[in-house]
Amino acid sequence: MAQVLEFKLPDLGEGLTEAEIVRWLVQVGDVVAVDQPVVEVETAKAMVEVPCPYGGVVTARFGEEGAELPVGAPLLTVAVGETASGGASDDADTQGSGNVLVGYGTSDAPARRRRVRPAQPAPAARTEAVRREPVLPDAAVPASARPGPAVAAAADGQRGGSGEATGPVDGPVPVISPLVRRLARENGLDLRELTGSGPDGLILRADVEYALRAAAKGRPAAPTPEPPARVAPATTAPVPAASVPATSAPAPGGVRIPLKGIRGAVADKLSRSRREIPDATCWVDADATELMRARAAMNTAGGPKISVLALMARICTAALARFPELNSTVDQEAREVVRFDHVHLGFAAQTERGLVVPVVRDAHARDAEGLTAEFARLTESARAGTLTPGELTGGTFTLNNYGVFGVDGSTPIINHPEAAMLGVGRIVPKPWVHEGELAVRQVVQLSLTFDHRVCDGGTAGGFLRYVADCVEQPAVLLRTL
Image 1 (cartoon, helix red, strand yellow):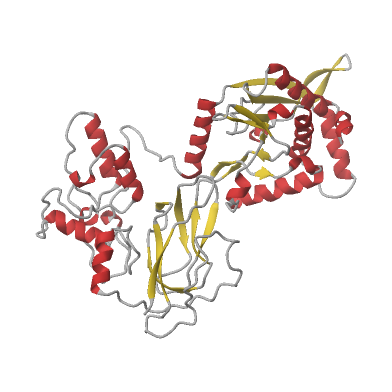
Image 2 (tube, rainbow, N blue to C red; image 1 turned 135 degrees about the horizontal axis):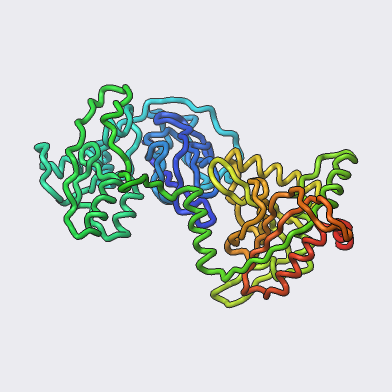
């Protein structure tokens, strides 16, 4: 007989605890091979294709596109060993490679998907599925039109089998979203005391938020409206908009926007930076006229064009070699400053998905041409949403070119757990005293935010002054090449 195995959302690394389903790559009934990508998810760091460690027939999917799942939640189930018809399957593979990401595990090319009709589970198996209460598997109709067995069973229990709500009872709680469960758990709310406003009494996030607001105001939670009528499961037509319940309640006088995905990760990291790091900022204006002339000369000499960001990165790595205190981190538990012998240079990149900080590995060992190429590659991947978690972590120092937004200065927030960040404003013509005379020069403002635990102002000022000297006189940089 075929063995049904459950594939759970794997640990995607770097402290990630949840992911959003962006696109399913397989359907129920498809035959999948070991390590074949089955779903595309978006974490707080990147878009990732998740491969299945089992080969066989997909019998169920858990979660709709757009839903968020915690690490360890079921993604899908696969029947391995046999096809639904009872014969041995050439496409099924009982040997899994483990919960791995793309690029790991077996190297065999994934087999072409083939649709088969999955076998119907035995009655005992269906009963067990109700008890387990997973997030709902896909069916032939949208989940909002046809609740899964766990929700239906819980809803029938609440209604006492007569269609009328009877209050909390023992049995499964009609909740699909693990985030709703976590919200209730973190706030000490018993979900059995709620009547959901979703189909068949499904408890939505809006129901939990309403109950929490009611509790905060010292009044009991009002009963939610009667759930909409169940759509006949025989149809596969789209559900009318009027029958789809709202997933969130608007805040009084405004709109609530969840802090999740990249926006949530950025919020958490910036908050932690300001909470843990005693930062200070110093800045200086620099005459970048000679740097721009040097760049123009380099680009007219042939070869790939050199970017301003690459030149600033090369200056940064030279400055960090002279002031290694700023290329470090603080181990708070050990009460030690850890200095790095390499420079993994992060740079801020604005994308449609939000602010990300790709990391150029071993930036100290790259020349201006190599840095330009790597910046271009990582920027393109950032805009396409294809950066890997490894390309977004491990930085030791960050360069922030906010001049692309048309601003002169800023006070950067350190990219925790690093110790410093250099900000570069726009380069614009300004009046400047040059060789004793007033002239129009290309001026840029440089700002350095640093962790005051790793060094004092003298070190930070020396670093920033060296960077400014290299900008004003690029020949200074030749001494360290």
